[in-house]
Image (tube, rainbow, N blue to C red; front, side, top):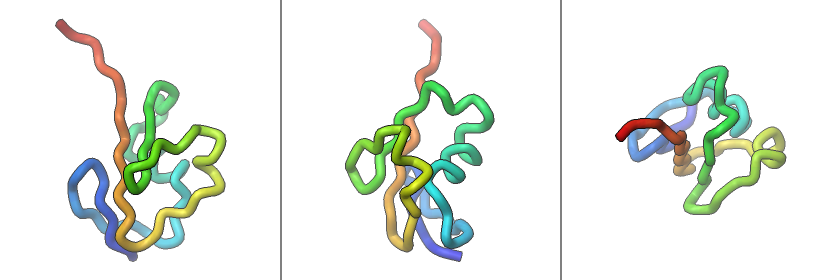
Length: 68
């Protein structure tokens, strides 16, 4: 297990963990419209499968929502 920050909250996750797997867990099946930041850098979707989340990383998962 490694310590990371996900959306500002400290978490422990299995290691190694691909960014794509983490997004699927956090955003659910419908991760189509989300944006992901890793250590204050936006990560394009095609890179999610090759990037490993490591100890101390900060991940931001941003999903749009409707409302008014």
